[in-house]
Structure formats: C-alpha cells, structure tokens
Image 1: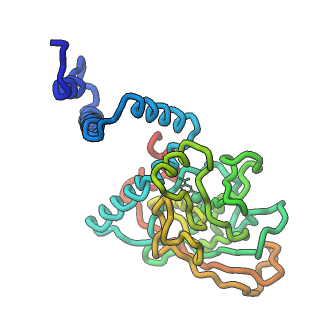
Image 2: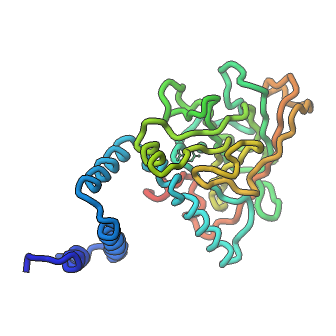
Image 3: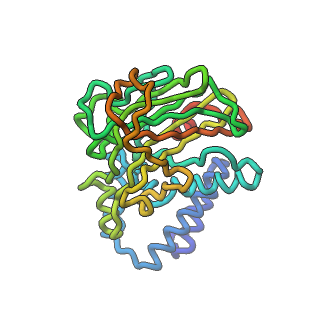
Length: 305
Ligand code: DHB
Ligand code: FE
C-alpha cells in the first residue's frame, strides 16, 4: 500500500484530499505536477540538480525577481497575446495596443495636471525630449478625466525603487490630462535596460545562452472612468534590441516617431528653450465592458483587489 511506483505516486499526489478544496487550483496543480514528474523522468534529473533548482527558486523569490523571469520566459507577452485573441474574437480589438507592464511599476507617483517635467530637479541628461498627445476613445472623443501614469529607466537603464541610490519616484509621474484631454511631459530619451547581473535571473539566462536586454522604452498605465485600463509601453526607434527584446514586448504600433531638433513655441512652462526631440502619441482607449476592467490599477494590484 505504501510502496509506490511513479505512476501510483502521481495518482496519489493528485487525488488525495480531505475536502473539496478549489477545483480549478486542484486541476491546474495536477497538470503542472504531472508535467514536472514527466520532465524529471525524461531528463533523468538527478537529486543534486533538483535541489539546486529548488535553491534557485528560493533565491529568486527572496530577490524579488519573479517578475523578471515571467517576462523573460514569455509569460507576460503570452497573456497579452491571449487578451488580444479574446478581443478579436469578441470584436473588441481596437485602440492603442497593450504591452506588458513589466515588474517595475510603483503606484502613487507624484501627481500633476496636464504636464510635468519628469526629471525635474536633476541636471539635463542628453537632448531634451517632450512627449505629448491626447487620451481619446475609439471614436476620437477626448477623455478629459483620464490619468496617464508614466515611468522609465534612468540614463544607466535603472529604475527608481528597484536600483539603490535613486531618489523615490524619480522618473515616475501621474499626469491628469487637461480639459482637452491633453498630456505632455519633458524628460530625456532613456536607454535600454538589462537584467541585473549576478542575480538569479541572470544565472538562468546565462545557462540558457540568452541575453537579458530590453530596447529603450517608456511605460504607461492609462485610466479613465468607464474605460478599459490600458497598460502599454512605447519603444524608441533605432535601438539595437528593438526586434530582440528579452521580454518579447515590442509591438509595431508602439514604435514612436521621433521629431528631432524641433523648436516649436509654447513649451516654456516645461523649461525647454533649445531645440528638442518631440514625440506625439495619442492613447486610444476602449470602453470597459465591466466595472473591473476600468480599475485604475496595475496588474498585480488588480489581481489581488
Ligand atoms: C523587465 C524590465 C523592464 O523594464 C520591463 O519593462 C519589463 C521586464 C524585466 O526585468 O523583466
Ligand atoms: Fe521597463
């Protein structure tokens, strides 16, 4: 009775119970455990290899890098692809394409109305850059209650709150659009990003023979009452990794057009005097199908709410 073959053990693991539990969790766990039993058997995984992998998981968890691994192994993009497919199937595919949130969002960034100098208080970093546009619905109607949250990496590819030494909320802001649903911000064009070296994430990527680079990008979380919260990013053209993002997040509709060396007037309030690089980009939001879709929250917070 207590001498078990592999198959009998798997059956016992997946069927033993003293209560109903959660049927969905039971089914999915059974599938994952079955697949891992098979993997161990097929590759003749040795105990030392197994325990090294368990140790890697523990270090991954305590380093707070689980979100880096999900992005790098394609899960974040997979969820986007599946939502895109569902949108096409239900005739909802419209508006600005979604893109992965990444693991580096921080809520409650400082709030401004209409415009903000994203890197205020710090020395100029490269050519000034202004990004501006409107938030509209799929019919082009302005959404004057919209909130645009923006975050990007610093000149060394690091994010505040995740790399030591950066001031809180640096390069993170929330912009409540103006009465014409316009937003604009001044910053600098960020470089690409690379996963932290000498970390559980980089260990796995080295073992896989993969790089951990992302092309230059800027993150957005756009929300408005009654509209489906939009998580997206734009990519800056010309980056070496634009078609080779380790997180697979680049999308055609999200590569912005740079207008370098422009000198339009009306940007004095952002302190831009020299010619600068401009990007114009409107965010086009879908109507929310249900209340939960319009929660102005990031991925993890929405899941846990
Ligand atoms: C990761 C980093 C990012 O800046 C991002 O946008 C997505 C993913 C990462 O390290 O996994
Ligand atoms: Fe990022």
